[in-house]
Amino acid sequence: MRTLREIPDLREALDAVRRRDQRIALVPTMGNLHAGHLALVEAARRQADVVVATIFVNPLQFGPSEDLDAYPRTLTDDQARLEAAGCDLLFTPDTATLYPHGLTEQTQVCVPGVSEGLCGGARPGHFDGVATVVSMLFNLVQPHLACFGEKDYQQLAVIRKLVADLHFPIEILGVPIVRAEDGLALSSRNGYLSEDERLVAPMLYRTLCQARNALEAGEAPEPVLAQANETLRQSGFTPDYLELRARDLGPVTATTREAVLLAAARLGPTRLIDNLILTLPS
Image (cartoon, rainbow, N blue to C red):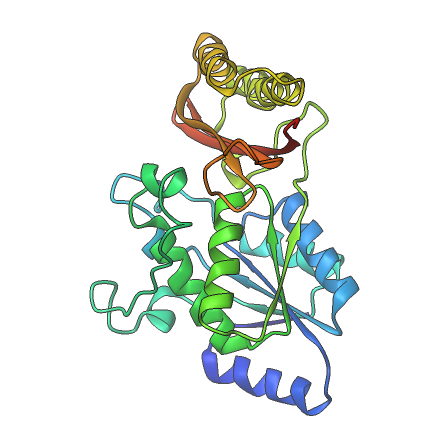
């Protein structure tokens, strides 16, 4: 696996790939990789000839009081994991490379509608930062395929709308959530949890499962969601949101059958997100 840090080197390497008419898959990450990230690489490996991963802790998607400085940087370990998973090329630019004129002067991409509410409401400007850096990586790599995890369900929806609206010739592949044995969705931020908090954290998944089962059994959403919120609070969480949406993140109506249950909650200083797909009864 080659590791590249400069844009001209990346373009030169990928020009050679395109001359061989090989299919390119992109896996964007912020590093501190776990099995969920490696599942993205493995999915990309099955779909493409050349897998390009990126590691960039994107300051544009962090709010002023968020964990940009504390976010774990583990490049050496990440390189070893990526190579073992079958990655061919790793691009690890620094902030000055992608934003040479600074963040305040940076052209930004906004994806309206689907980026609003949920994490977009709790983290203002977050998805503008995501859409901007992903657009930049799409332009630099020009992949045939890009893989994103379904744990960040709203982010995946934002990327799909971005690709459709801006006519990127890129297939977007959503990869299922990878969970620990106790059900906790894998996340780089799980490392922030204390030992006691780690024992409590799977309650987010279990609460979503209970709510999903009740909703699929035909119970009314409002009391089900209210009970789920109360369960989280009693378990020690501070919920940001717990919402039932249609699969496209639009509102649930009387005719909605395919839906998604989404939650974000803080446990101590750690913000956890999760979601479950469900089918509502007719």
